[in-house]
View 1 (cartoon, one colour):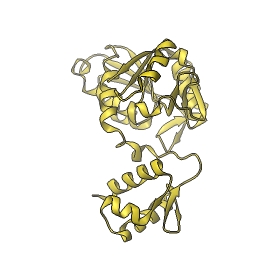
View 2 (view 1 turned 30 degrees about the horizontal axis):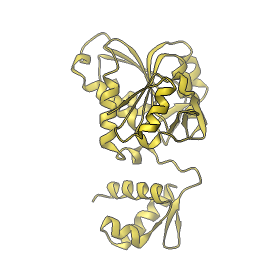
View 3 (view 1 turned 180 degrees about the horizontal axis):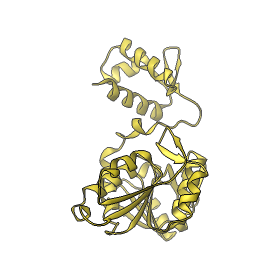
View 4 (view 1 turned 30 degrees about the vertical axis):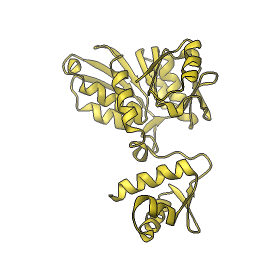
Length: 259
């Protein structure tokens, strides 16, 4: 196992368990305790965790993994979700993509569609995510519009009032929204209030809103609200969604697609 793979696994375990002991982590990953101690020390230097006597705990109360360490979580589900979301987009449309691991996969699924290989443009993509813009910018058939703002290192998203000037001048056919939580009563939400504000603007500028998220985030709440459930047209999630939760979204007027 490479160092990067170990680090991703350690951070995932830390999120799930809230605490990790050196010996426990070494046994789980099949490496020496000395290796885990070095990994913990190096992750602590990057402020991704806090070292404790004999182990580690998450850094801070509201813990959020940077995007590069979240990309491998629930990867199979995200691939299926992204493929289904990409099929909801018609050639020639203007698509808004928020940042996040699932929306990044949606961007890749759009780029892989044969019917979007040509056109002038085949799609116009508006995004505040630097990584998505970078991946799609090499596709000459895609017109890429990037909002202004200050880069948020955890998610590569541009946030802040500078984005208002761009988003206030455009109209989207569809906004694809990645979320940290989606509750039938409380709507969509993110951990960060600035991220939520930009995502809210994208939703307001769109004719229809699609939420793309795995089922682990459904029925949950997060700190900053993005938009109410009534503003969401389609929820695309994985087949692991609880049927009662899916019914609550349907009752609220949301089309639910479990893939």
